[in-house]
Image (cartoon, rainbow, N blue to C red; front, side, top):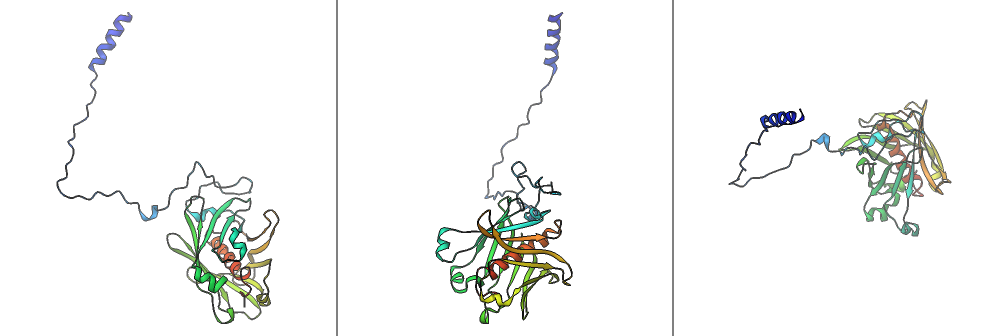
Amino acid sequence: MLQEDSVRNLQYDSDIRVAQPTRIDPIIYTESTTITSPQSQPNDSRKPLPVSTVQFGDPRIPGAPSFLPSSGLDFLYGVPSIHIEQTYELHEYSGSSSENRYTVRGPTNETIFAASESSKPRDRLLFGALRPFSMHLIDKTHQEALSFRRKLAFGLLCCQPQSIEIWAPPGDLLGRVKETFSLFNAEFVIEDSHGNIIYQIEGPPKLLCFCQVQELHLKVLSPDFVSQQGSITRIWNTDISSFTQNVYFADMNLDVKFKALFLGAAVLMDYMFFQSKCSCC
């Protein structure tokens, strides 16, 4: 019986026809031909986030998001505060002027962005903290998430109003932070890309222009000065034995574009109040 089954299977196998591949003759180019690789679409220029190596969200933060961000700005989603630490090299302690670098961290000390200034040595030497620069913020995918652009803030007796622009790739203007004229206190407005005022910032008394402050607390208010939307502070951090800029949001679910404007304002304050003795006049 087993022998008959084996014979039957053998006959069945012999009836199976295996498809043979069709023969295709190679193409021979007789004229000069340009071969190009497929080009990606402009909207697909950003590399995807490596899901296997980066997990977005922190279970220690109530309400922390669990999705994976599709852009660098999304790393700010659901974050109640951000903390900016300036990094130094040995030659910077000797007094030589160099480009500033910062690490932007979340509330649980996780790194969100690495920021680096790009400026000319001549401008750093001649204009100091008033120099023009561009600053690039790199996210966890090693791609640019934001960029800050600041023009030369130099005028009679250092009294030129100062401002900074906040951009998102590939070239979207998110808004500006601008100093406004005031007799007693340094005041600022945060504008959207259309020039509409969306926040007001109460700065320190202008008498601080003649002395370099160490700590500062600024309120970010609504356009009508009624409600507080956040704050920007500079305090001594005992954990790292250094000063840090801290940005707090009244609403942790605030639009990430507005959070980016807060971050740009904090960087501008650092250059104005903590890197120059003549800054807020």
